[in-house]
Image (tube, rainbow, N blue to C red; front, side, top):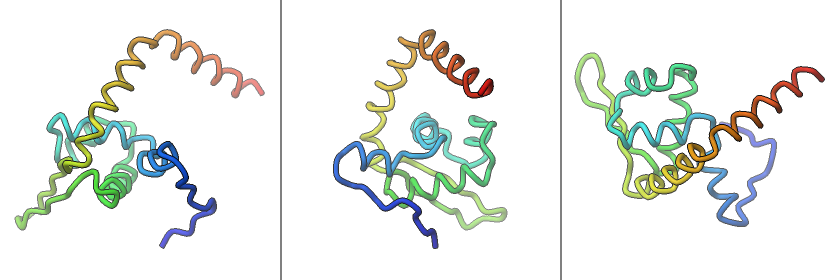
Length: 123
């Protein structure tokens, strides 16, 4: 059982979204599952920088938050597939809008991120 260091703050929609989508790979996982990459190995190939353990933890959290469903097929070796729930599907237009905003501001965002990371490494 996880002990929270910071108490839950669920006072507004942004707090709720942060609680459900906080995690480096969750938005990407939702996007790739929506695109049809349903097996854990497919998701691992789409996100090679993430460890399998972290992806499994974040997939489990997405499942707990009712954004994805998991089906385990009774075959040897076991086959697992993830799919978006109807509730999870409602996030796809939001993720798409965020992605488009990132694309439109790609150069500026990249420069700001690089500048910030250089400042952090100098200090």
